Image (cartoon, rainbow, N blue to C red; front, side, top):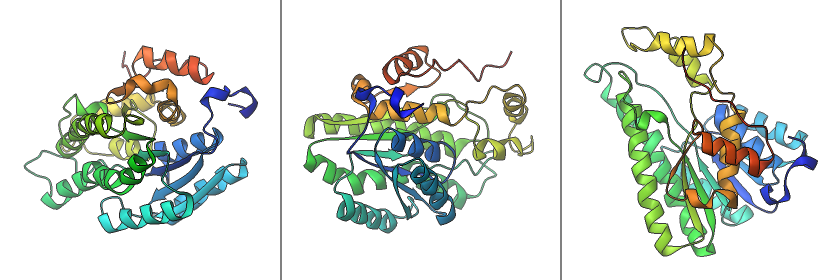
Amino acid sequence: MQEAMMPKSARLDGQVAVVSGAGRGIGRAAALCLARAGARTILVARTSAHIEAACEAIRAGGGQAEAMVGDVSVWSDVARLADQVVSMAGPPHIVVANAGVIDPVGDTWTVSPEEWAKNLAVNLTGVFHMVRAFLPGMVEAGRGVLIMTSSGAAAHPVAGWSAYCAAKAGLVHFGKTLAEETHRACPNLRVHLLYPGIVDTAMQERIRLMPPERFPDVEKFRAYQRLGLLRPVEEPAALIWWLATPFAWDYHGRVAALDDNEVRQRMALDLGLSLFPPRGTLP
């Protein structure tokens, strides 16, 4: 979208946004989208080269961006990042907890216990780390938006994905519980969860390469890609942008799913976008 076409009420000028998992995929696209809307973006990921390249793209478009390397599964990393952000820019207005991993994949009784625990450390505990590090300053400031990337796998079991499904389901209940807490402690602080749909990311590439004995549904995911049913990363990025605006106030403590027609229609109207089509349904 051209900046001149963006509704003023959708702009995020003067706001600071922290995005984890921002080196590629949905996180990178979300950081670019928030920056185009006027936010000063702080991109967090484990790989410096990825977030530096994303920051260069934001700056080339006239936006503000800083890269910070860290692993959300490590509390000391996230605590350090929060200290740096607050020292540099004050408590953020928007925190997008997006970092995620799919491995291990396979029957639960065959996978590595260490990898299973690492999945939850990133997908669930990593979000807690982001909350614990950034929310105190946001509560003290009396405002803010926390956005958590979950998955439809939170509600629909997928054979071979026990760690991922468990983590994403736990994340939904964590987010809803947090919404209850912030509603009491800080009424102007919102907590949002999102299901991005089936998106064309590096994670999907990895899924398609898995052997059927480890992941029985692999052919279905190969078909999504072959038939052009994957969502481009720009679509969930726009959902994150919408959740960051006051338009989505009534979604506090709720899951906003990109496959929900009402959500897509509201996004298009509020953000001045073309209506995203339904996707991800095999014929």
